[in-house]
Length: 289
Length: 216
Image (cartoon, rainbow over all chains, first blue to last red; front, side, top):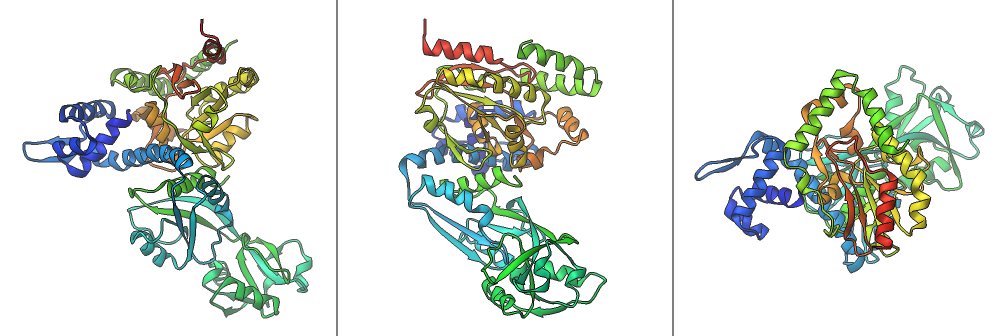
C-alpha cells in the first residue's frame, strides 16, 4: 500500500466526488482514479461504486475507511512530530481525568512531548466520565483517562492503559499499619470513607457477603479525604498511584484484590496536532508495560 | 548457518502443517499478484522523517539519528513471529559491527505496549525497538499490507490477539523490509520481499553499509 493511494481514498471518501477529491489532493483526476484502482487491487475488492452521478463507498470501502484513515493519520503525525521538533510550534495538551485517576502513569508521555515542544501548555480537567466525553466531543479536551466500565459512543477510539489497584489508606498510627498486606476481613469494623474520587473500590466491598463495614460518604477532592483519614475518621480505599501525605500510609489489599482498568479515550478520525498525537502514541506504546 | 538458512529450516518445519502452508502460500501469492512491490520505497528515494515512541517510552526521531550517521530501519512483524525472532537474534549478534561502522539500527514493529517491550527485553537488544503505532511509518515506506483471510484466520486459531497487540482492529502487518539510509535520509540500499520468510541477513546489511562508507 502506498501513502498517496490511502490519502486519495480518504479524501475521496469525504467528498464522494472524483473531481473535488483530485482538486483537494492537488493531482489530476486520472492519477487519482489510477491510485484508487491500485488500492482496490491490493485490498481485493471495489472500495467505491461508480455510477454516473453517484459515488458511494462499498461495504469493503466502509469497513476499510476508519483503518486507513487511522493509518494515514499515524503516518502524518509521525512526520508532523519530527517537524515540530524543528519548528517548535505553540501547542497544548488538554487531558481529562475521571474521578480518582491521577496523572502519574502518563507523566512520562507529557515529559517526552514537552521535551520537543518547550512551549507546550498542559491542562488537566477532573470530572465525571460523561462530562469528559462531552468535553472531548465539543473539542474542549483532546483525550481522557476513563474507567473501563463507562459507556463510550462508537466514534471514540480507546485503549486499556493500565490496571489500577486499590490500597487501604490508614493513619500511620492505626493498628493495621504494622501489617504488610491486608484482607477485606481485616477491615471489618472499620469506617470506610468513600466518594466519587475513590474509583468505586469501596463500593465493591459493599456487595460482598460480609457486612461488618461502616460506610461514610465523603465527596470532594482526594486531598480532603486524606485529611479525614489522617484525623482518624476512617479508612479510604484508593488507587495505589495516589501520592500520600506523611500522616497517612497505604497497605495493599490482597484478598480480594480490587482492580480496575484505566483506558485512554479520544474521538476517532479527528485531526490532531503533533502534541496530542505524540502523547497518544507514547501512551499506546507503553501501555501495560 | 546464516540467517536465511535458519529461516529456510524454520519454514520447512512449519509448512509440514497443511493449514500453515495454505496461509503462507496465500499471503505470498496475494502480494505477488496485487502489485504490492512497486509501492515499496525504492533506492534513491527520500525516507520521510518521523518520530516514534520506543519501548521505554521515549520519542526517537529519524533526523536525530541521521545526525550521527547512517541509519538502518528494519521493519518486523512482532516477537510473536518465529522468523522475526530468528532475525532479532541475528541483529543482536551483528549490532557491534554495525555500530563500529558508525551506523544506528532501529527496529519498527506495529506491536504496542508490553508486546513491543518484550521484543527488546527478551533479546537484550541494545538497539531501539520503536512502536510504529497504527503502521503509519510502514505506510509511508510502502511496506504495509492487509492480512489475507487464511493468514488472519490462522493467527486467530493459534490465539494471537493482533488487535490487542496493535491497539486497532485493522489487521495490517509490514513485510520485514530493511532500509539503509545515508546521512541525508536517502535510501542507499534496501531489501524487501513479499515472502516474510525471506530476509536480509546481517552480512548483507553490513556489506551495504561498507559500500556506503567507501563506494567503489
